[in-house]
Image 1 (tube, rainbow, N blue to C red):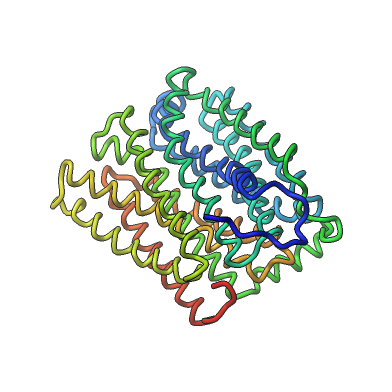
Image 2 (image 1 turned 45 degrees about the vertical axis):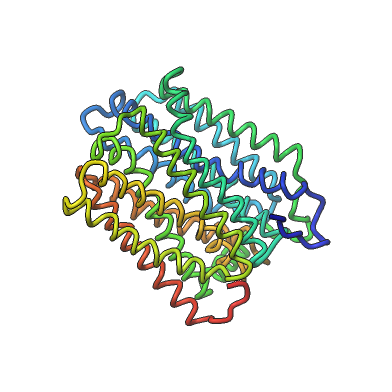
Length: 414
């Protein structure tokens, strides 16, 4: 299907296909950095935290927390100096954190290295969205972001398998060298091929006053606050699944460590359909309507698949099949909603897109960690905490989006 054309006044840039591919690679750095670690958690726990193996899950939370902090700074910096220098600088930090992680002697030092990685990865995470917003807006932006999110959803499906191969050949520390390579590829591609999208005339000085005023504008916009809350809950249920899925599938359902990446890949391949459906329908149905339908449906799916497993009605292969449906639905919903929620939040903030991306991204990411990390640590040998988290988060997302519709029923692009 053809991608929407940007305005004729847009700066020189890549062709649409390569542009989407580059944005997807930069955005997918986070997904790769999270999901390729999943098969490494047992080895890291055995080497660095044998007495409390569940603490190895904090490797995911530390990375996401670094992203949440870094996002707040990446947007204002990109508004002041441009999109490309900010992304490349962030990738330098990301690579430095990966190199430090290869030498980490304790879990605490590894967590610090992962936090540094997340701090650097925040730049491609937030500036990619601002860069797309420089060229597109409204439903056209949502459609572009749908294709970007397709890769974001697909990368998790293959990342555990890639991590397993790397671990087999080089041990779990070898995964961090793969992060170095990924960061170098994305940075060089951006540097060599993509023109700067923020002209000097549109840049905002990196001073506390303008940053404070712009942040106050974002925080003071009721609709943006509603979408930030919805993104927080959406990310929380996704991150809760990510930190829990490896022990759930291997300990609760008895899959082998070798089989887990293959099942995870199947989940990712199927769930990529969410972004395809969103790209197909968003121009006709609108971002908010699709997101509301997605979260309402997720509540139904979570209850229909989780209750039979938790009550013992479904066991063995049936229970595994129900959990796979549940996990696939969580990833499917991510592809169907995240691009829409980002576009909705930035719709009234085009004049401060970088900072708006920072505020919305930092708030939703950090708050989602506050929800997801305890869910992962609450793992009790059942899928109970995970299902409960998903039902509550999806139901609240639906309610928030309904509130936004009642507040602005004919909002542009919604």
